[in-house]
Length: 381
Ligand SMILES: [Zn+2]
Image (cartoon, rainbow, N blue to C red; front, side, top):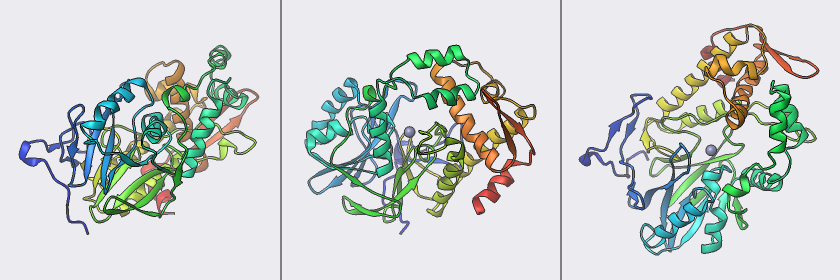
């Protein structure tokens, strides 16, 4: 079952130890050259689509099917990505059509060209229903003023009214600029489903925390996990808490970090020598070590927060002690949402108290035990 059927590229000296992360990870493949594929197995190929920001690229994967290719994720919905794909159709894809597209989650670098590729190849898109609903929602508010509950969330976190006014005037969430339309013919999958892609059976694993219902796919026969952004080898996946429409959901009751930690820990049920094919950086072996490392990084941030909140603070006032720098605009909002996801986890464990003032929420540490033990206890519940 766990026999390795993929190819390791040792003979070319491309297998290397990780830098900047857990030294027990192994990287069996060199990155593909631009416009070329890297062969992972007889039926699975790795491609990179460039991204116009620091992340640099997204990995997409092709699985050979009888009459074409099943594609995992697509790249962003920009004209540049479309031109890049145009070059790939006859070369990397050998003139064969895309027969199905699997989308891991709603972020633009993953889903940006699903609709465009679907229109070209008339193929179904496979994703989770929740991720599709989020996409539809993000399109529906593109180009409109941010809702009041979003501004209230930022003000309660300690954003100045001047800064909030700037956010109010910034009318566009940009989703429709980065995602080229909503795919139409979707096949929804859920946790525990099995699907056949090419010659292989894959188990659908739904994770949460980075996005609400992120799809990973595990093939027992090949011992390969397409992990999307659920596990990345050497960069963190953001775990954030954004407000929901309070008519439907009170974001103060949400616990994205708790869901994230449980989903990550659940992946340790897979064999430790699983070949992980992530959406960024390189495929690697060392799933359990990487999961442990990611959980330890959250643990360290939670310990830092417990120390910073000894003197009560707004979320905004916690940015400097944690990140050691002043930030503005989009990064500020990202840090607020990441810190709030962690603070709310602490609040739900009864370690931090929220004082809900007329204008801002102040968070204070009640008790500061070692978070690693707390997380172990939380994961064993
Ligand atoms: Zn993502």
